[in-house]
Length: 152
Image 1 (cartoon, one colour):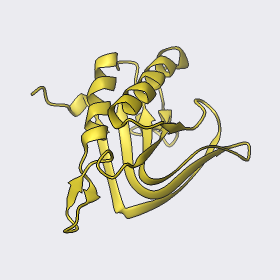
Image 2 (cartoon, helix red, strand yellow):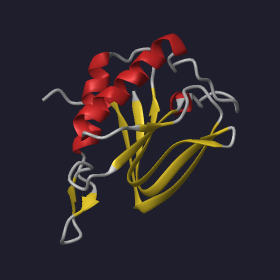
Image 3 (cartoon, rainbow, N blue to C red):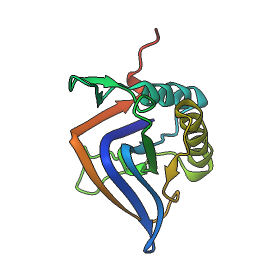
Image 4 (cartoon, rainbow, N blue to C red):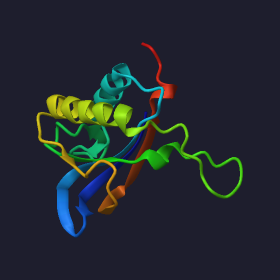
């Protein structure tokens, strides 16, 4: 499971001209799910995202989590995070999970993040052609992959 986490002052998703999710002050999370991902990956990544301290405190240091600032999350499914680009000029997405596996894990991520942050998670529409707008605050962008997690 891969996530690109961007600290934003605002972000929104439109599908066919209609806003499906919009936030102010929080995270835009682009989430890629691979065929190898499990519910354990969801739990680990959701916990890391919810507890990540990348919001400024009273001294301007990155010491506050999304819960500390009562921030919001816009979660967008993005299979292209598993693009393989070593051969040729057209990316291969063979490692990305198929919808029958990815959708349940995406939904579990929504539930997990909502429980951990005690807020409604805004979303796009899985598999749709989405238009994402954002104002990256900082800019702050963090990339995480559950394949890189440490067990402690």
